[in-house]
Image (cartoon, rainbow, N blue to C red; front, side, top):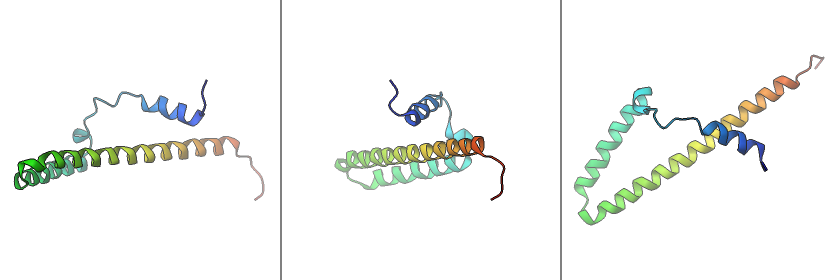
Length: 97
């Protein structure tokens, strides 16, 4: 049984196959930011003592988790806004305001 229709619909849309989409090939902004981030990461790794490399890796992982969580919130908000717009358009009736 579906407990929440919104979550059901959002999950259905999210299952589209985006695994093979390379953001570097789709967005030049993403590509350049990714290149800069990788350079900064490598510079930090060079100056940090070896025992701090694991900490840097964990920091990077947690930042990625934060980014994924924020993207999920933004996606769901956009999806909700789109559904609300569609419903409002379907329920609209002409009349004096």
